[in-house]
Structures are given as C-alpha cells and as structure tokens.
Image 1 (cartoon, rainbow, N blue to C red):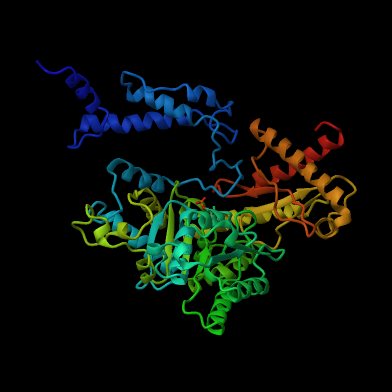
Image 2 (spheres, rainbow, N blue to C red):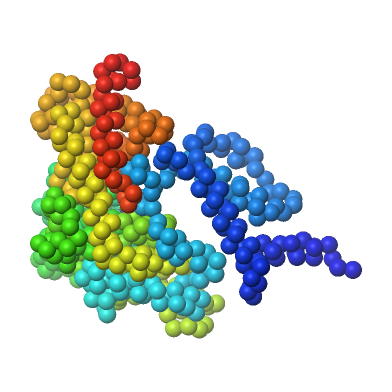
Amino acid sequence: MTPAYRDLLAQIREDFPQPVSDQVHDAYFVFSILRALDQVDAMKSKIPLLGKAQPLDYAGARRCRLSDRPSSIEAVTRELVGQLEGLPLWGHPRTQVNVVAPPSISSIIGALLPAIYNPNLVSDDTSRGIAVSEARVAAILSALIGFDPERSAGVFTFGGTGTNIYGVKIGLEKAWPGAMEDGLAARGRPAVILASEQSHYSKLNVAGWLGLGEKNVIAVPTHLDNDIQVPRLEEEARRALKDGKRIAAFIATLGTTDAFGIDDLEAMVSLRDRLASEFQLDYQPHVHADAVIGWAWSVFNDYDFEENSLGFRPRTLRALAGACRRISKLHLADSAGIDFHKTGFAPYISSLFLARDSKDLDLLRREREKMPYLFQSGEYHPGTFTLETTRGGGGILAALANLLLLGKDGIRTLLGHLVEMAEVLREHLEGHAATTVMNGGNFGTVTLFRAYPDGVDTWTVKDRERCDPGYREQLLAHNEYNRKVFHYLHDQAMQGEGVLLSMTECYRHTDYGEPIVALKSFILSPFVDEEHVALIVEKVLEAREKIKAGGL
Ligand SMILES: *Cc1c(COP(=O)(O)O)cnc(C)c1O
C-alpha cells in the first residue's frame, strides 16, 4: 500500500517547475505567471496606484496561522496579487514621489531567472556565469566611472546602505589593521567617519553596526547647494587627528537623496592626501564615494555637449554638464557605491560596491579554515570576503540586463529626458510669483520647491526664512502652508486628478535651527511628459486658491 503522503507529494510536485523539460507543465508554469500579471494589469488606472489604497489590517495579520491543507497556485496567486493593492506605480507618469525607478522588462527577466534557478554567489561553483556577470558589470562600471577595470573589483550587496558598510569597513581596516580579528575595543581609541550633513542617514547605521558608534560620525555643514564645505571638513578632520583619533572614512556624497547635491570629491581627496602627509599617518584614510544616485550621470563624461547629437535643450545640457563637472571625478575615490535600483531602472535590490583596487577587498577576507564546509571547488569565492554568506543573482543579472539593453545612449536618453522634465518644471515654478525652487543649484531630476500665500515676496523670502531669526513665525507658518498644499495635491492624485509628489519635512535647517519643509518632485518615470509637469503647477495654484477661500 502506498503511504498517504504520496498522493499529496504527487500534487505538490506539480507546484514546482519541472527539473526535466515537460512542455505541458512548462506552459502551465508560464501561464501561471501570465495570469498573475493579468490580474495586476486589471488594477491599473489613471490613478498612480495599483488598485486603491485600503486601510492596512495589521490586527488581521496577527491572527494568521499556517493552514493544515495545501492550497493551489491559482488561489495563492490571487492572494499575492491582492497584496499589491494600493502600491504606488513608480512608472506611472503621474508619480514623482521618490528615488524609486520603474524596472525595464529585461531587468525584470534578469531578476526572475535567478529566482527560478537560485544561483548562490558565495562561490562561482554555485553561480557559474552569474559570478562572471558580476565581474562583467564591475568592469563596465569601472570603465564608465574611470577606475582601471584590470585593477578594480566589485561585489553586489544588500543595498546602498551595504555599499556604505563596505566602504567604511575597508577604511576601518586600513585605519586599525586587524580590527576584523581583534575588535575595536583592543584599539582603545575611536575612529571617525566624516560626511556632510546632507549625506544619507545610513552612515549612522553603518557606524552603529560596525561598532564605531553613531557619536563618531561627524556631520559637516554644506553649502546652499547641498555640497560639503571642504574647509569645515578640514577643520573637523584636523581636530580628530589632533585628538589622536583615526579616520575610518571620508564619505563623499555624489548626489544627495533629497536635493542632488554633489560633493567636491577632488577637493576631498586632495585634503586627505595633504593631511596624510602632514600628520605622517601610517595609513591612507579611505575615501568612499556614495554615488548610489549620481553614478548614472557618468554616461555623460564623454558626451560631446557641443555637438549634442541627442538634441537636448540648452537648459538640459547646462544641467547635465553641471552635474558631470563633479561626477566625472568619481575615479578619484577609493571605492564607490552604485544603485541600479535607483537611477539604473532595475528591480530591488541591485547595489554594487566597487573598489578601485581589488586588494582592498582582501582586507575583509577570512581564513579558509573558518569556513570548513565551503569552497571545496570552483576558482572564485566571493563568500570569503562578502558580508553576506548566500547572495542571490537577481541584482546582478538585472544590472547586466539594463547595461546591455540600454547602452550609453539609452541611459543618456532616459536621464536626459528626466532632467529635461525637471527643468521644465523649474521653468514653470520660476514663472509664477507664488512658487520658488529651493535647490536651483542642483542639477538632477529632483526639484524641491515651496509655495507661498499672497503678499509674500518670493524673491527675498528664501533668504529671510533661512537667515533671519525674527522671521521664525512666518517660516513655521509657511511650513504649515506647504503641508496643506501637499495634502491637497495628494488627495487630488488619489482621485486621478493630479500628480503624486512627496514632501520633505526638512530640506535643510535654517541658520537658527528650524527645519524647512519642501514639496518634492522626483522624476524617474520614463513616461513623464510636459503635460504632467504642467499639471503639478496647476494643482499647486489650485491649492492656493482653496487655502485662500478657507477650504483647506
Ligand atoms: C538611498 C540612498 C542610500 C541607501 O540606499 P538603499 O539602497 O536604500 O540602502 C545611501 N545613500 C544615498 C545617497 C541614498 O540616496
């Protein structure tokens, strides 16, 4: 008699892709995916969400338990698709929320294939060509930003935050050789991270998790264009060195998250060189470039702006060239972080850490004897130095897919168009007496702006708000005013009548320490066009009228 479980097993085997090709079953597999996509498609409308945003039921979630009996692929698909209800559609032309890119079809296939075949990047033995793909992407990006691809090396990791961990950890091993083995306590004295106030907050996480401590992150003030004040950086670095501290890393941000401020990496590297020689340091402080957003502009490093073969408008060219001025210095960094899931149109998660000198990665390498059950065969074993043990191949193939699909001109076209749309928005905003652009000196696809009530002189208000403590009450009132505008825009977008934007509670602090609220348009959908940009301004003006009439 066959045991009872055997029937169930036969049924469950149908739930897996067949290990040996079975065309009828393959069709069922593909069709199951197709049905899921069909159901998602039915949730699309002129509202920039999938379906509608319903209240989220966490209480119901806590009551969930594992059922006794198996379900079917069809039923599970319906359940899974339902979970997408209310999700923002990043590719929708009416979505300008944040730095989230809609993935291309090739990059989705790149993420899907490893989801089926589970290559493990711990070793090339278990990942084969995908380990080679990782090396390919690293080489392509190295050459693009100006590292020597023969000397550099790269690994994909769990996000932009992961790339910052790698950068700082390598710097820490340079500053305190052997910290990996002996721990920081054995060193007695702290090591610091220096980065700008506008840099990403993940530096705090990195400092905390690496055991440096958040307190040892020194946040250096920025200029009004959101780039680090190098003389202030020098003061802070000197103070730390005089106090006998070591520098784990300088983090240069090439493209800040909110405003696309770009640090002067060249000046930071030359400052590092000067200090290393003046203080006769026995290590070279590491300079990591957090370029997770800005890397993509490298495609313009060798664009002939005079000839302008792609035909961008003069204002767009100026913005692209303005960003490139500093992005083109990326090759001076010791390492760089690159997110394909931000400005590379890939699905989450696709983040590359690039070391200019592959030897730097050796600082992270563990002894083989500590991992006895791994690495019996194959020739390349990233698992001997990566933070993760298992690493999937989705991010790698997604990145490779887009690099192959788009090429330089494809990325130029996408970025150029997004920047062009941001510039059109700025032109509109500058053309109205009631709106003003906050990050006019930053040339990305993100625009921070504020709206003001009648009677405010928008020529001078920015400076007064920022510098004049006597203007505090008005600043706070204007913050509240912009929150109202934001809520109106949000409601309108949810009714299919506007554009989904976001708001930052603190674009910068005023000189007297108050946060400045700003409305934020982050254009990353290739489908955004001039009418969607015009709609934003229309809706902002409409919000002003409603506020004036006392309706908001
Ligand atoms: C988004 C971002 C990060 C963090 O990247 P994740 O991929 O979200 O982990 C780090 N630095 C900058 C400048 C960012 O914009």
